[in-house]
Image (cartoon, rainbow, N blue to C red):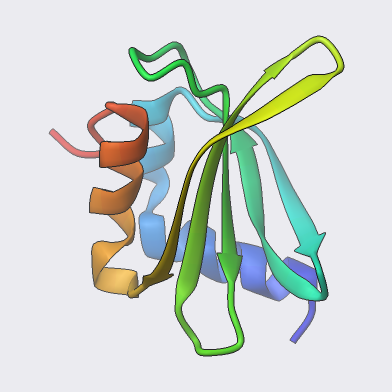
Length: 102
Protein backbone atom coordinates (compact mmCIF):
# COMPACT_ATOMS: atom_id res chain seq x y z
CA UNK A 1 0.00 0.00 0.00
CA UNK A 2 1.19 3.50 -0.69
CA UNK A 3 0.35 6.84 0.92
CA UNK A 4 -2.07 7.89 -1.80
CA UNK A 5 -4.17 4.71 -1.60
CA UNK A 6 -4.40 4.93 2.20
CA UNK A 7 -5.35 8.62 2.02
CA UNK A 8 -8.07 7.87 -0.54
CA UNK A 9 -9.42 5.03 1.63
CA UNK A 10 -9.61 7.30 4.70
CA UNK A 11 -11.33 9.98 2.64
CA UNK A 12 -13.88 7.46 1.35
CA UNK A 13 -14.53 6.07 4.85
CA UNK A 14 -15.27 9.52 6.26
CA UNK A 15 -17.29 10.63 3.23
CA UNK A 16 -17.41 13.95 1.44
CA UNK A 17 -20.17 15.31 3.71
CA UNK A 18 -17.88 15.06 6.75
CA UNK A 19 -15.19 17.11 5.02
CA UNK A 20 -17.76 19.74 4.02
CA UNK A 21 -19.07 19.94 7.60
CA UNK A 22 -15.54 20.54 8.92
CA UNK A 23 -14.74 23.17 6.30
CA UNK A 24 -11.82 20.96 5.28
CA UNK A 25 -9.18 22.19 2.87
CA UNK A 26 -5.63 21.36 1.87
CA UNK A 27 -6.05 17.57 1.97
CA UNK A 28 -2.66 15.92 1.93
CA UNK A 29 -1.45 12.30 1.85
CA UNK A 30 1.17 11.99 4.60
CA UNK A 31 3.85 9.59 5.78
CA UNK A 32 4.38 9.55 9.54
CA UNK A 33 7.15 7.28 10.88
CA UNK A 34 6.69 4.89 7.97
CA UNK A 35 2.90 4.84 8.33
CA UNK A 36 0.52 6.39 5.81
CA UNK A 37 -2.43 8.67 6.36
CA UNK A 38 -4.37 11.80 5.48
CA UNK A 39 -4.04 15.31 6.90
CA UNK A 40 -6.24 18.34 6.33
CA UNK A 41 -6.93 21.85 7.57
CA UNK A 42 -10.27 22.48 9.30
CA UNK A 43 -12.47 25.48 9.97
CA UNK A 44 -12.68 27.42 13.23
CA UNK A 45 -13.78 25.48 16.28
CA UNK A 46 -13.99 25.85 20.06
CA UNK A 47 -11.08 23.46 20.68
CA UNK A 48 -8.61 25.63 18.76
CA UNK A 49 -7.59 22.84 16.38
CA UNK A 50 -6.50 23.90 12.91
CA UNK A 51 -5.48 20.53 11.44
CA UNK A 52 -6.47 16.86 11.70
CA UNK A 53 -4.23 13.92 10.81
CA UNK A 54 -5.54 10.35 10.54
CA UNK A 55 -2.86 7.64 10.22
CA UNK A 56 -3.42 3.95 9.50
CA UNK A 57 -1.39 1.96 12.02
CA UNK A 58 0.13 -1.52 11.65
CA UNK A 59 -2.73 -3.01 13.72
CA UNK A 60 -5.24 -1.91 11.02
CA UNK A 61 -6.64 0.75 13.36
CA UNK A 62 -6.28 4.50 13.15
CA UNK A 63 -4.48 7.18 15.12
CA UNK A 64 -6.22 10.56 15.11
CA UNK A 65 -4.15 13.66 15.92
CA UNK A 66 -5.46 17.20 16.16
CA UNK A 67 -3.10 20.10 16.35
CA UNK A 68 -2.92 23.86 16.13
CA UNK A 69 -0.54 25.58 13.74
CA UNK A 70 0.30 29.22 14.31
CA UNK A 71 3.05 30.61 12.12
CA UNK A 72 5.93 28.14 12.31
CA UNK A 73 4.79 26.59 15.61
CA UNK A 74 2.80 23.38 15.84
CA UNK A 75 1.13 22.22 19.06
CA UNK A 76 -0.47 18.78 19.39
CA UNK A 77 -3.86 19.15 21.08
CA UNK A 78 -5.03 15.54 21.20
CA UNK A 79 -4.03 12.05 20.11
CA UNK A 80 -6.34 9.04 20.04
CA UNK A 81 -5.01 5.56 19.23
CA UNK A 82 -6.54 2.20 18.38
CA UNK A 83 -9.57 3.78 16.69
CA UNK A 84 -11.67 1.48 14.54
CA UNK A 85 -13.27 2.73 11.34
CA UNK A 86 -16.70 2.78 13.01
CA UNK A 87 -15.37 5.15 15.72
CA UNK A 88 -13.47 7.46 13.37
CA UNK A 89 -16.14 10.14 12.89
CA UNK A 90 -17.08 10.26 16.58
CA UNK A 91 -13.42 10.57 17.59
CA UNK A 92 -12.88 13.50 15.22
CA UNK A 93 -16.09 15.15 16.44
CA UNK A 94 -14.95 14.91 20.06
CA UNK A 95 -11.46 16.19 19.28
CA UNK A 96 -12.61 19.18 17.21
CA UNK A 97 -16.10 19.95 18.59
CA UNK A 98 -17.34 19.97 14.96
CA UNK A 99 -20.28 17.84 13.83
CA UNK A 100 -19.55 15.66 10.82
CA UNK A 101 -23.15 14.91 9.89
CA UNK A 102 -26.53 16.62 10.07
